[in-house]
Image 1 (cartoon, helix red, strand yellow):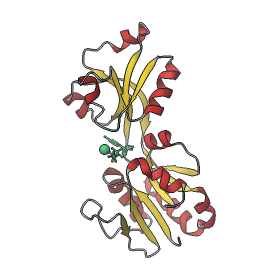
Image 2: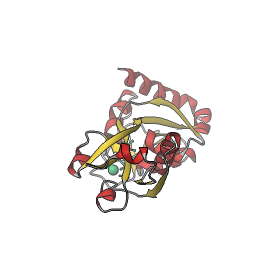
Image 3: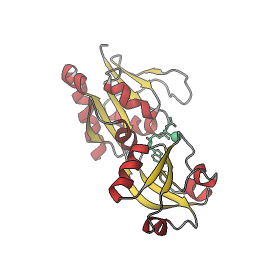
Image 4: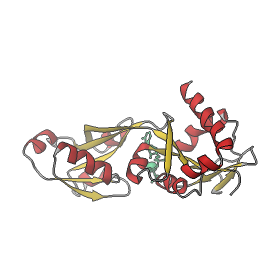
Length: 214
Ligand code: ATP
Ligand code: MG
């Protein structure tokens, strides 16, 4: 593929990447919220955007189906970094990975007593590493969404999930009890593309870097 392909997910990543793209002189011709197209042209005939699931962005970039992508640190940790160069923290889509439990559940006591905790999460790798580093024994239950429901429905004692305002936790009578890791989105670059298409990619990377620092 000649030209540059950029993998983005719709929603906050697309929205918050738009100003960075603009700083590189790239303006998508359509909005994925209103268009059903999965390949979106830009004002630059050599640059196109592909719209994929947030968790699929690293895969597209790793295999070179996209040269660039924007993915949350959560997604990058879960996916692993093979074949990916991740030069830049874009400081967008910021949130925190937290452990949360039902309001009234004595998490500290459960940990102190060495109880085996049932933990539900979409982020099982991050959760496993977090509890292992603390020496806490957990049974991990993999979910694909609506983690907040798991403790309420009796599926798990705790969840590991992304929190920004805490509104969703509160609405479901959950409280965050432990910080796992701060999350923001990073630029990811296919390593082979960076060598072969450096002349086209480096100016985009540099423009993103300057825009982030503003
Ligand atoms: P999908 O909706 O396809 O299942 P997703 O829920 O991970 O995937 P988004 O909700 O668009 O997709 O989140 C994309 C990225 O934005 C996440 O990987 C994370 O890095 C970040 N993110 C998720 N939730 C928040 C939030 N509440 N505030 C800020 N950033 C968030
Ligand atoms: Mg979502």
